Length: 226
Image (cartoon, rainbow, N blue to C red; front, side, top):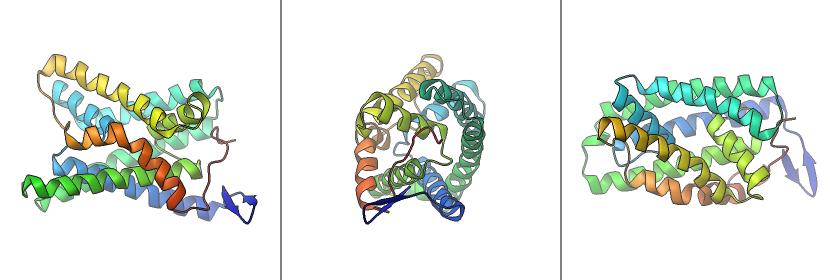
């Protein structure tokens, strides 16, 4: 939804598609870069990596399974069974999983993971910031988004009175718990580090900042997608 000169306007299909593509690419880019930096990924990406490490299966399998499971959870929490939204979120999750692998493989191929650790820290910070920007954009468009970020949107407005930080940290707490469960079996952590801590404590604030400073006329509408 757009807010200009005191009036609210619904986004057209072309606008929705444009914002969707921008946010999908930004989110996948940021996650792929954070994985390649090896300085710590966003918590849900890290949890998928740890589950993959514990089971020997591909990370993409757990990213996809998480997206599907959380998409159904969102229907329950929002108390609104919107099947078109469910299908769209699952499609987003699967597309996201593919693009993250594509970007991470590219960044690894050019040697991001081999440069000095002190140079990889700002790279990881930029990657995490990019993820937050992407989340803010498609949460405000509220058309098609990753189920995990749809979950944050629902928690933020239905359960935490608009507080983005509390919603994001509650979301990430479940991801950290999954990583701990995987650690109990593998006795080894992967993809957890500086970037994970940064995401846990500051991604909600990053989203709230982006809401006010990037695409400022784009505002939150009905979170149920009605």
